[in-house]
Length: 154
Length: 282
Picture 1 (spheres, rainbow over the protein chains, first blue to last red):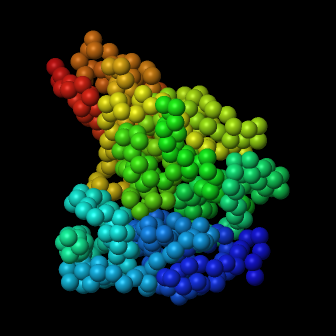
Picture 2 (spheres, rainbow over the protein chains, first blue to last red; picture 1 turned 90 degrees about the horizontal axis):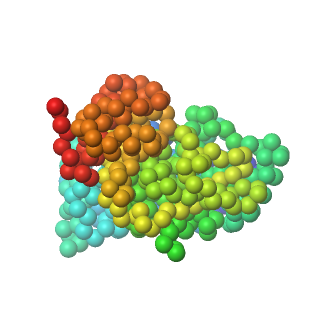
Picture 3 (cartoon, chains in turn purple, orange; picture 1 turned 60 degrees about the vertical axis):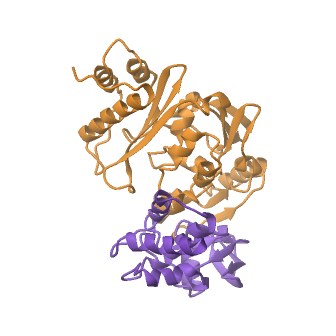
């Protein structure tokens, strides 16, 4: 039940309208995970540093731990569960993950990069990938995955 | 998830926002204005920020403006740092904000939120300090436009119920020679150690600094010393550091000695970049 501290509303997630009730103080990450069962976005630092919780909102990569769920009303939310893009296969082909915890966040960020930049420089790719932290593999494989898609697009 | 419950409001005009604040304040709800909200969310999680109501100013058209009008750059407070960087009307500002946090975080952090933030770096203010910008502030008495030099002392001196709407910068400053650099202790990410922004106007180099002390600042006294060509660069830098009237930070990011060492080298870089001046170690 909604009151002055919470709202019952519809979120557009992965192309589907989802009716949810949440507190205004709730971050989007928690609503995705605990109300909608979309556990692809990961809680990491919960401080905006690690990028494991990255989702796309209206096509822009956003850290869902830094976003109130109420801010996402009337916007298109895309999580890893709703993704079907070549970058996912490229991560497999280029061994761009080990434990995989950070992978959904990286993929959402890379997807945003590939959609927003036709021909990013190496420096720009590096700069974008600084938004996400991986503790167990190198960034080289992830950069290679991104570049392989750029090559395909050419 | 914040344990602190709050109400949420999204006004569509300045007047509505100010009236909401008055109303919520009178009800004891300790309202705060919310723009990008990143700091409110992260500090809220730590119970450092507690509020009963947030007033999200992102939908207010005046806060979304980013344009040049009548030879003035108008920067709405709710512009994200990414938007400022990509529109790039003011290269010094674009470069300075492009070093704040990381790309994805900059998709959310707004220029007004950074300038008004509690975390002491507040690097986005440096270009506005260097250009003697004006700040448009809304409050219950209406809007007021105040020079940043009058209202930014360590932090933006807002009265209860006021919020930053826009920053206004004379177009003449936008394409002057500049140099801005952020020094971190290690790697390309992580918290900053020192950020220095410099702008050369009429042959004089203006300098603003973040990360040296608990607040960003521009010191006229330091600028006068640094621009006094009667001495070698190294001597001027030493004298300028002697003129610091607040103690440098001494924390886990860097001791005060290390910070001063980094600042000294960074000031050398500034003068080398803008003047071609090599330090004279003699």
